[in-house]
Structure formats: C-alpha cells, structure tokens
Amino acid sequence: MLSISSHQITELLVAWSEGDRTALEELTPLVHAELRRLAHRYMGRERAGHTLQTTALVNEAYLRLIDWKNVRWQNRAHFFGVSAQLMRRILVDYARERQYLKRGGGALQVSLSEAAAFTVEHSSDLVALDEALTALSKVDPRKEQVVELRFFGGLSVEEAAEVLQVSAETVMRDWRLAKVWLLRELDKNSNEA
Image (spheres, rainbow, N blue to C red):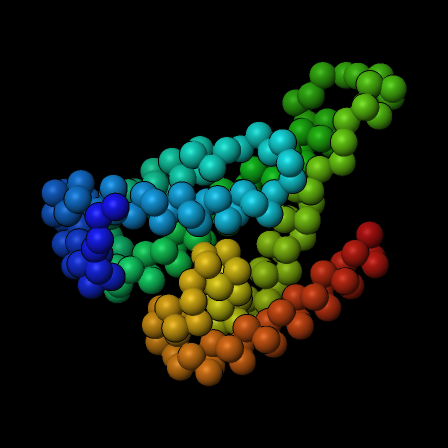
C-alpha cells in the first residue's frame, strides 16, 4: 500500500483545480480507496439486496467530481466532504426514483397478490433523513454540514473542523445538537405518516 500524506493529496488537489491534468491522473488512484470506503459506509446503511453497488456509487461520484472544474480545493478533508455530499445526493436521487417506480411510475400493471410478494424498502428512510437535513440546513446550515461530514463522510471531528474552519469543540457541540434536532424531526415526521 502506497503511503501518502494528507499534505501531498492537498497539493495534488490544488494542482488539479489549477488545470493540471497529470495531477488528476496521480490523484485518482490515491483517493479511490478512500472513496470506496465512503461508498461502503453509505451502502452499509442501505437495505440488503440494494441494487446500487459500491463500485457504481464510487464511479458515479467520481464522474461528478471530475466535472467540477472550477472548484478551489482547500485540502483533503474538503475534497472528501464534497465527495460525501455527492454520494448522499446520488443515493437520495436513487431512493426517490425507486419510490417513484414503487408508486407506479413507469411500471407494468401487476395483480395485488404479485405486489404483496415484494418486500418494503428502506429508501423512504433515506429520503426522510435527507428531508430532515434539508430542513436543518434552513435553520442552521453549519449543523447540517457537520452531520454530512461526520455521518455521511466519515470525517473525524478534527477533519470536519478543518473543512468548516471552526474549532473541534464547535463541531462537537453542533454534532450533539444536530443529532437531537434530527431525531426530533424524524420522530415528528414518522408520527405524521
């Protein structure tokens, strides 16, 4: 396994954002394992038998990342924070599409007995969490970012603090308050359903 420092990754990210295509070629294999780890973490929260695979999630996130030509990458943590946000978007879009299809959008007609054979999917949980996070971002955008970086991105408190340019204590406080807020919001929404 190639050992490379966070500083070296940051240098490659900066060079890439300045238009150096060779930096992207050097960067890709170095960040691929970390992107897979993020994707695996996301997919670990999905229901068994999910049709979107880790590799497909990594590939889709990578394709979206290389389209970000004008991003000024601050550092490794910033890059993986954006990657986590992209993966969240991909999974939420996928879950919404599955719900659309489950509700009959573009589907073939089946009998009631055939429909009863299908299991209930957890895509609605991810959509509910995304909606709660969107609501949180309207109340307190930084707390939403902390959740996204810590929960979805797997960043440490220190890495999240670096991305957000706040202290680690601020991240911990935001993390605790955001979890309470989200639990209350999700509980409220489940009681309304």
